[in-house]
Image (cartoon, rainbow, N blue to C red):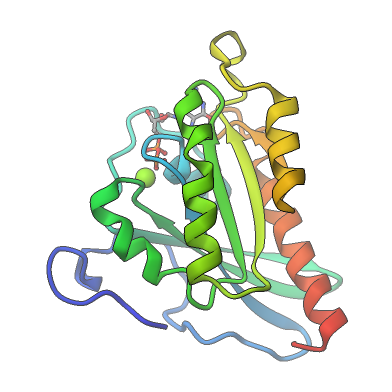
Length: 205
Ligand code: GDP
Ligand code: MG
């Protein structure tokens, strides 16, 4: 896959959350596959915490700001097939946007995250979708995630609004909490199941 070069974004700046292989090449034999995911959305919506919860089953209140890109991986089983999810967590800030764009390439799944307690992060979704359409493969499976569902009393975006946005744009949708882990596995795994089914249907395995 392409990688950003030079400056502060180089590979030596990556923080590995957990990795079991350095290979980027999809394993396409019958009993194992590898799906690349990208996690995108505004700064501080909880992208890194979602990754940490999914990969390491933990939550840290004061997570460091993501610089450039980090990645983690976890292997799940679908239909007796070992599916390794290689998940690239990106920085939401505008100054990193061009780096983020280079990570769409080769991604089979995207988690597009907003924060249900900050309306502006929901309003910015169209920009993220535009990037996704422009820089990813046509067949990418996109899961819209309304994160921080544990903060119900501070909610600014209703579940119905999230659902309706997802339907309008042909996305899957879940509300999650990286803090309580509610729906976190479900969001990552549902995305994998859809990619898996699509690959089987189209014979792209
Ligand atoms: P990122 O910039 O999108 O990667 O956001 P982070 O994962 O760094 O999270 C930003 C802040 O939101 C941190 O203080 C987290 O502890 C907090 N946070 C993330 N997810 C949740 C969640 O589901 N619930 C609550 N209450 N806080 C969260
Ligand atoms: Mg982050």
